Image 1 (cartoon, rainbow, N blue to C red):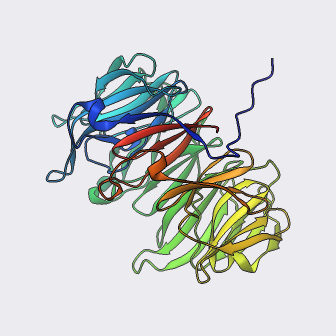
Image 2 (cartoon, rainbow, N blue to C red):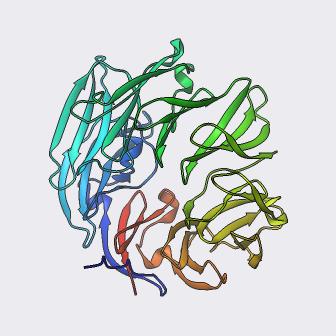
Length: 420
């Protein structure tokens, strides 16, 4: 039997369930947090890791004096009805992989006693497994059937990446990379994986490597610094370049899996996309132009891109937010033709979910859905119609899709939205 297509949200969705952080934790001021950013410090960012039938989120008590998340616990929430399935203590986590591996959320902790551990939490039961280690872990990610760990002393340019499993974290390979930074600069998204490639970012230097073998494939860095990185299909890595001393934007470039430059731009260029779901033959957008993703041939150039930023690529359409005119526009990804243009407003928001036709965005006071090809606004849903809470005291909401449910999360509430 063919898999059932995920439903489209062509009409205003209904609220299927809600979950309150204070009621779930049993204390006022409890907050939901994204497990990917750990619990050692308070990330101030709500969110969850999608385990299919179970959404795994962090919950705890934010402590503004210590920038910590006190009494942190992981909570498994059933995605279909919001029921809490389990709860597991999760103190002092440095971070977690974006997605589960073999049914487990994989995280790490660096203990105050110098002992580290890889911590696995079963998505279905909440059962926790620890694998002790003497590494100083900097970052962890999961891709396919492997975890990838960056560890070492960045101040001595002594950093290794390992590929393995939670129980045997270097069973597949280990490779040392000549990158480093001061400890205070060793933070943020240091390790990224996708489309068969890995990227290690440290101190303005960037190294690309093959996920299967660990072989280094390219490097970028001094005298320039790399400001941000985005891995796109089919293993293309787009990087924003800056001057290390002044921080001035120099441009951006995209490299293939061998490190060959296939596209470049000058001046300020955003490489991060909120939604990146192109069709198989959709070109790569960089700066004001579109390029073939394999050969690097320039296909078209559009003025709409010269003073704006691409925020989403969905199917065969590019969404652009123009800076000076406060406009947003939809462009045909294959020709650069402007399909529609309109003035941006507080319902335009940040693109979050593409359901196959509509692009759903999170605005300042509402969610909104736009037909990406026509620009027609399909619906607007105020936050107050989802959960009744004091917005002034809540963090910025997030929206992600899990199966047939749109999951709306603030620090105080979670809600499952279903097709109306």
